[in-house]
Image (cartoon, rainbow, N blue to C red; front, side, top):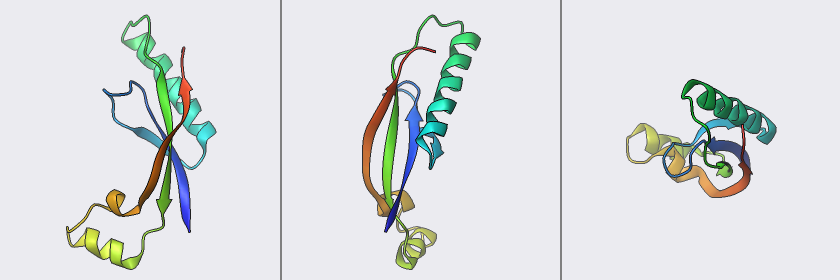
Length: 92
């Protein structure tokens, strides 16, 4: 059994994925706030379209955790089942 979490990139290709939540609405709200803050503080007239992703994750098993603790693997590499674009956000 797995879980799905959501996250965003403000400027795809240049910013890292951040803002993780189990609720897509929370991620979109946070993204809109971040975009508004960037536009205001950085005195920018526009931002490219931002993207929201869904990450389908396997629940880690004890062997996964042991491999991570031993430094033999990264947890994300072991539990990521699928990553997909689910929404784009334009404007402020």
